[in-house]
Image (tube, rainbow, N blue to C red; front, side):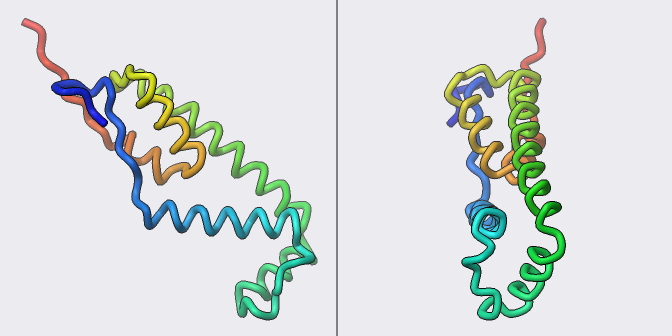
Length: 124
């Protein structure tokens, strides 16, 4: 999404690969935090053994880390809005898409916005 000749409506969707990695990882993390008793640890191999160790010995740390991760995503989303303003992205829909994509996918989205170099016309 980009308006003809301007970056006011610039938006670029992130990599599906990274989105899938993030969804699976955060999904597993959510499962560990809220339903650790339902995880088939033995069937997950080394990941299951490591997860079982963490649940048995560091559950408070895991839960605090989970909420911290979401707090970081909120902070990244707010920073995305600041970057939109600095880079001249004024279109409301584009800004909303940047906010949501960054909230759900974090740096996989934010890195695209950081790399965006708007084209500014020199004033005469």
